[in-house]
Amino acid sequence: MNGKEMIPRGLDKNAPADANEETVPPDGRPRSAQPRWWQDFPIDVGRDEYVSRRELTKFTVLTSAAFAVGQVVVAIRGSFKRAAPAPMAMAVASVDELPIGGAKTFTFPEGSTPRLLVRRGENDFVAYDQACTHLLCPVVPKVPEGQLHCPCHNGFFDLETGNVISGPPRRPLPKVLVEVRDGQVFATGMKQAGT
Amino acid sequence: MSETGRRHLVRRQRMTVVNGMFALVVVIVILQLWLLTSTVNGVLAGDFSIAWPAALASLACLGLNAGLLRYLYLME
Image 1 (cartoon, each protein chain N blue to C red):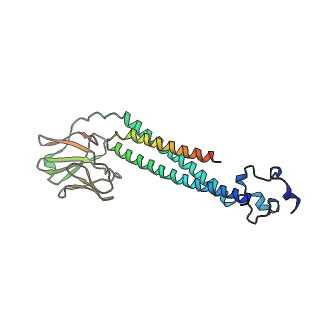
Image 2 (cartoon, chains in turn orange, red; image 1 turned 180 degrees about the vertical axis):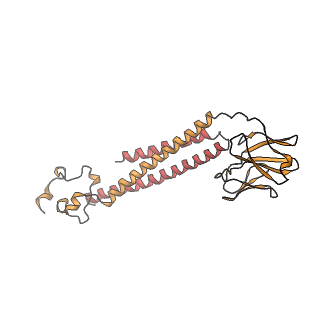
Image 3 (cartoon, rainbow over the protein chains, first blue to last red; image 1 turned 90 degrees about the vertical axis):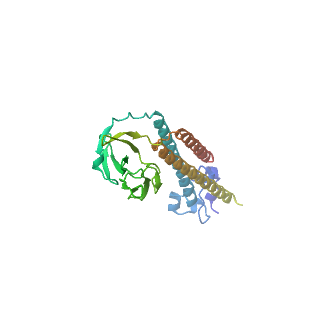
């Protein structure tokens, strides 16, 4: 045992401030007997793992804070959302223009995303937003099956109601209200989602 | 048990506690992610009724996580 080992722990300037954080040399010899590289960086795996796991927990809690803020923003925006004024009715097609089972795209109101008008019967027209509610791919009408099909991820919607039948979409297609007047098909408004 | 051995065990015990807390925090964050996606889906479909209850639940989750983190730092 040399003289350095006799120094009380509190007087050893190389001793760590927090005794719990003391790094134990693998060979059990005193700190002063360790090689230079160990004295320069006396941090063992256990301590390093502890600190990094603690930091990871801290950043995960920050993620939690971000989710909570996002949730509150969604709630505030939902509270202040005002219903859009009803657009003016406009003619989008003539009845003779579309055969039964036929479809046509149009915009309503002007400048909107494409809408899809489908003729299901003699005087039976339905119209929806053409963008799938999953990832906005255009839907394709399958009139004999009574469905609208999104070919991107095999989403199926009911042609009569716009509700989801199967596939990844979770929300129904926004519906355009249509009326037949004097041989013309008029778009008269949008059915609010969820109503 | 030697003094050095006891100290080493203390750190290892704390590591176990940190791992447990981290697992709990991750589970709560996944719950918040589920809340957020469900709320956004509902809001986009026109259902605003769940927005505020979900926001309060998410804030409660954040409070729980913050409490766990505080305990983690108090454990030092």
